[in-house]
Image 1 (cartoon, rainbow, N blue to C red):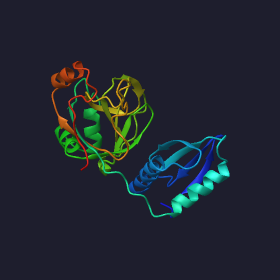
Image 2 (tube, helix red, strand yellow):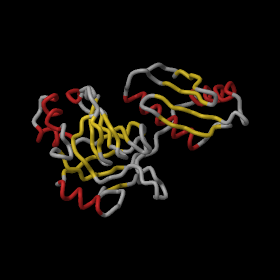
Image 3 (tube, rainbow, N blue to C red):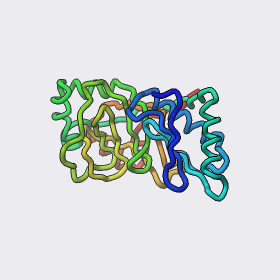
Length: 240
């Protein structure tokens, strides 16, 4: 990761602060810290902040500031001591694996050189960090997984996966927020809904949160889904 991130123009009203062109935990944490700091203390003219895996998109109102002035203010902010990340929230999420909920679990286990039972046990014993939200509203990218999880996306798309589907590729987990086609391999399903449009805060997860799966049966997940509660039986703890 470079000592000084790049500040790149993006469209008519945006700049991209890029910490890296290849994923690293340090770059991801730096992007999350900058985004949190800009949300807490906005720059003049700032109207939107969106952290990615290793970058931050910052949009501004052209009626209130010029790009050059925004970049200058950003450079001052980046030269200051690195901001602290907010304390993460922790989520324990029931999930079922394999069968119709996770039709590619067998293939993932074979590619990883593990048994299906070992893959499930390993996943449920890892605390995954929310690296970014994207592709669909509130949809989390979780990771990073160990090296034996480094497998590509599938060559062909699955026509549709249901909300709550737990998928994997390139050492990450994506928990689908809505019905979607995907090239990621499906491992299982949970009743947690990362995007709940009717809730006071429709995004249940935020970058930096921690999530761990706990194994449940498919019948238990179906029963949790039937309640309509977007938490889907998840237990959440807040920082003190």
